[in-house]
Image 1 (cartoon, one colour):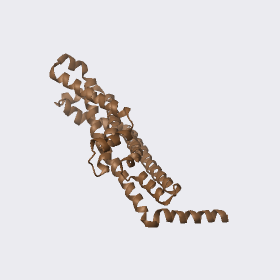
Image 2 (cartoon, helix red, strand yellow):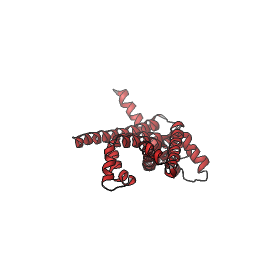
Image 3 (tube, helix red, strand yellow):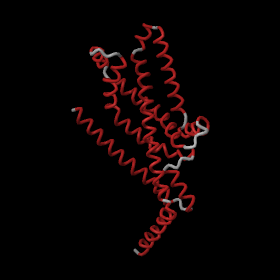
Length: 247
């Protein structure tokens, strides 16, 4: 019993030394908010890219025969856009996110002084490829009669997509999109490669200064675990609510 008490006392002393001395806990807080900032920004960028790419690819797949019959500039334009989207998906999904991040920071935005916007851009581009496939699957799952209903209301193709198809698609893919958000949150842990002090980088800096890796890194792991558990719980509640609304 005495040994356990002594261990807790020693652990408390180490905890105070690691985080409270020189206000090192403030670095963890800043890293935590930088992680949330990068994740939220990248998700917004990814959703915008995902909608555009998914709309182009699903429109091309659904209307390929009609476009071939009509021919002309519209067919060749759609074919070009679809080819660009396919190339984007192949390249982004075929290369590691950390390599994409380093290319963005050290090659494309070499003069950037703040790594956070670059990280948002890089993770957003990466997330957009996966979000696009999620959205494309959702659009392709919508019954073709919904397109005909939009046309009967006087909508053109773009208006039908915006007012009828995309709202239904969001409802269908929202749980999967939330899981992509969870994956994106964990992927941002490599942002420290380009000098961004995110949660993981803050823990590593504190570990290097105190020569104690156990407490800072386990604290980082627990924070990520807490965030993922909370987000998973929210996703579960959302899925249950969507199932109830379908009944």
